[in-house]
Image 1: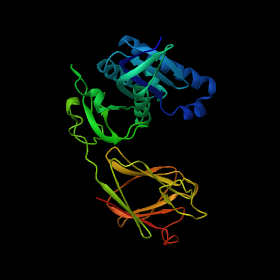
Image 2: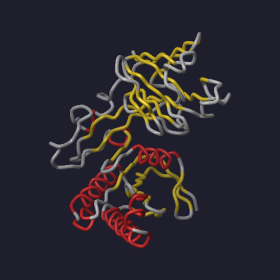
Image 3: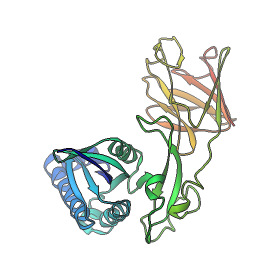
Image 4: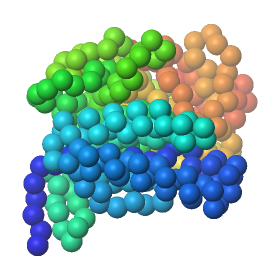
Length: 300
């Protein structure tokens, strides 16, 4: 029987598992990953949750409330940081969670809350917990602090949503702070405010803001900006507003060349870069070679 109810969905996966298989071998890597997932499962149950499934190096859980999920996530990270078995092999996890309506059916869960939680996990980095500002707002009790990470797009949602980083470490002296630590209740109010990004290519002017869809550039006609050249990939690069900044991500064969202000030109290949101030973007070739199709940008 299917039923929908509010609950917290939590995803956690082992960071760097591919390298683990390369360095430890298949058998030992599988043993270590199983050890991590078993530890995370036990913590989930301790906080009143239920393990839905494990998929490779990832675990999916449900917990009855946002507080249960936040505390479970913090305990998971602390377990990884303190247990000698995990520390010795440099094991770590990244965690994403979200509280919302989810449909329960045949022992599994589906719906918007699952999609959002999965997106939060994909945004998290090693030893990090990422959740939505909506999850932490209005939760009573003694909670960890958070720091705003700006906005992120989630598939199926019209506008980007506010996201936060949950600070689980007792000693934060070594942390790089995006902004001053803030109380959970103030997360949305103090999140970074986005600006505008202007792009100019030949005689075309394009303006993006924090609510714009990801902007695709490449050789195929399906891109928002099309550059027909042999050295440009079909889907070459993407510009997206996330975590309070406009980011360009290269997806190409021949790289994307970016120059910011008076700095030296950077070759970006299968990586992303924070666009700031003003400068140039060139797909597949350096600006000096690709003058005609140089894209000029300016961040307001």
